[in-house]
Length: 64
Image 1 (tube, helix red, strand yellow):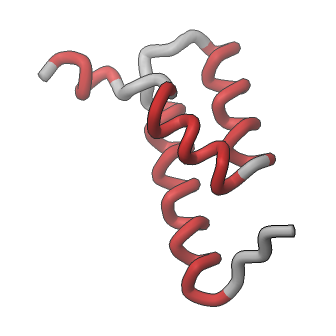
Image 2 (image 1 turned 90 degrees about the horizontal axis):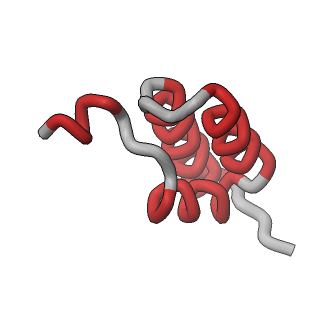
């Protein structure tokens, strides 16, 4: 089983919070936001990586 503690755990926490803020600020539907948020919360490391690759982007990122 994968165990993260100390500095690694803090880094994962910060990245997950950043992902959740970006998910909430995205232009995706409410249902998609909930599903992405649950994925990041339930599977912090794998969920973050999946979100980073395929997740919804913020509205400002799409306008650039």
